[in-house]
Length: 113
Length: 134
Length: 253
View (cartoon, rainbow over the protein chains, first blue to last red):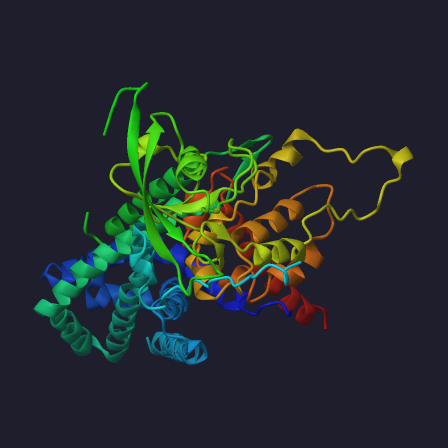
């Protein structure tokens, strides 16, 4: 039997899972504060725009969104299987397409800043 | 030999849609897996934030205002719960994937897991400080 | 019902019965078995077979958690019947053959699939260069032994397969926890050079990539082998392999 090509996605899943484990809760706390009207200084337009204008900010934002998207997409594919959906190829195409488009959009938006 | 005995094994089928009700650990596993729905959806919100940020101040501030809808607050609270569950489950099993052996000793799983928690708390505090919250 | 250490207790067992010659599907049969307080489920089954119903079929051999043949589902949990004690249960105890495996008869499972999988992963030393008797033994330091020692404790009891939903959901296509762990055990051995051959079996879609890290295998393992850890390490190593094979070959071109 041929060796699997799943590692290419699993690599992003492992990295994405690790990143979301460390980062997602605190990010949600930040936007939750904004949602309750207490916008953190850094989430103000000028501060955030300045951050996203620099290369370090661009890279950080890209890594967070890219890995979170691909990590979630891969786990979602497995979750569909676990809930009994056996159209795995279709599910895989759908979730990876969303992750791919999201990744491209991230680059485009970052370059516009 | 097999032919002489009347072998007629009964095949046990596992229900593909309800199997996870069989054991509590399967339920915990599924709870861990569905965290991806909330983390994925939250990431899409971040993507929208980035789009609005790239469009200008008025659009971005419109996004911040939209965040204040009740549905958004409820989503944030629920997503926070699921993302914390993802964090705990990830750190608790991280030692299995990354065992650390020094000489003849393998570090206990708890040491590796606790190291993850310590780094997580410090990193979260740094980000809160950076964001001007504390 | 209950008593002190020396007294007997009456244990209600609900046992799955299946006779391939007469039954179209399994059914449950209830027995009331007088047990000693210190008995394990296997003792209760042996008493039952000797005194109450000689037709009950089940496998066992050592009665001391070494042979791995008395694996069964006890109240829905994969257990060795010699390691599960009647005093730890209350009410009716439900005893079934291992989940996910075909039932040969009563509590006896068909193990053929597992035996085939063990063979596939080449669970033996494949040295780079065979040493002659004169050259002496293959030597190993204690630290090198530590790298795989835990994974060498498997007794092939198949509890991990009965615990693994992916094995059941893939209709036993998945090579599964014990076999992949055994492959990892040899891959980790300093005397071995057979990893490439084993990767052909385990780095496949039916191999380690069917694993979704439910972790149930490690929960139920009676010998604390921790198959889930072995499988995650195989995934990481296979992922590194993949990136190296594909990207390094581009770099070289």
